[in-house]
Image 1 (cartoon, rainbow, N blue to C red):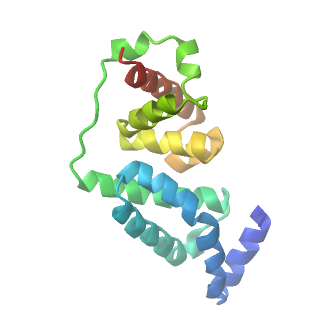
Image 2: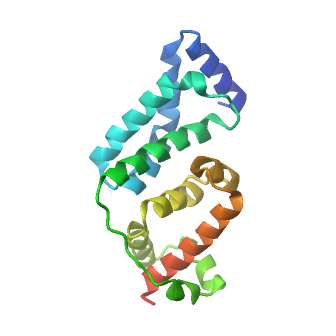
Length: 182
């Protein structure tokens, strides 16, 4: 369904055809689940939060103005719900000295997210991503796995596009350190 088709669907839902909301459940459940699980790590909590996201989206559908795509609006709700849930928990983050991160060359960092067939490298990458904080995991998920553009990610996080690019660059360096034990 195209952006304009989704807007038409939203208007129809708001005019009483609420059963059409099932389209959005089918279309966005899997990608939103992927985002939320990266932030909260618990499948049970993810399922509950996903239900909360769709409930809030349905209840707030009248406030969607179309300034961004519906998916961006929905991802923003999911991100906020997941981050709020993690703030209620006591999470420990893995800390790396700034100087260590700064010593990673741009070339080394740029190649870290290029997936290979090397199972050991994939496991290392998966483990390293697991050590990131919630925002970093969400950023990696949206940009690399959900293939959202810099502009869309900036809208979801309410950051500038430059800030998104800088954070992605730093996360790649951090992942390099985590994978290579520098």
